[in-house]
Length: 209
Image (cartoon, rainbow, N blue to C red; front, side, top):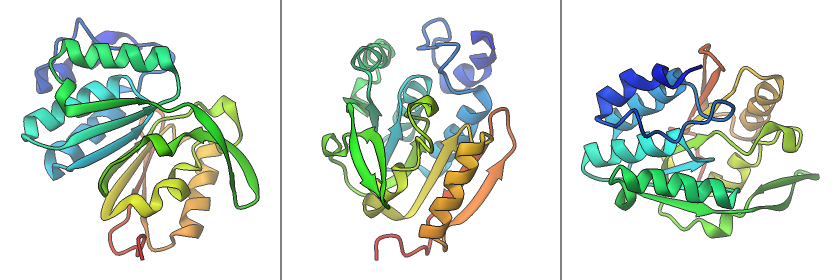
């Protein structure tokens, strides 16, 4: 995929398409970005948390600016990658709308299984209205993105919406099933876009109770 595919989104958001934090192997696809941008501009979340940083960071920070409020917190395990994203956001004048947090992976044991996931002690926010899961990379471990919900669930607002990229992959399909076993009242939707997108809506799921 070429960087030109992001041009329509950049035009919509008023971003300079010639200065994007784009990496061919890691950047989210335009159709996933379109989904989360639509949600952010429509629902105007006050607190957004994302797992992984890059193109999503720039566009969600711009949504906060256009909304006249809200703040994005990005968990990034790579120090250099965090620094690059932070610099890209600053070049677009959006630093005040985002906090890119270097959160190295650390060990957790969840339901008897060991995982490496972001150091959540680095994250201090109010209730999370929108959670974007696009990391850590799947090659790190089986069900690499599973810890997001059990580790953050008590921080989620009652009406939080969760978007997970790469949901067409077998691991991600399996871990969505694991999440739904833990929070059966959550409403799940699958979008068959380029890489697959799983959406969980926590409304009335009793997630904080």
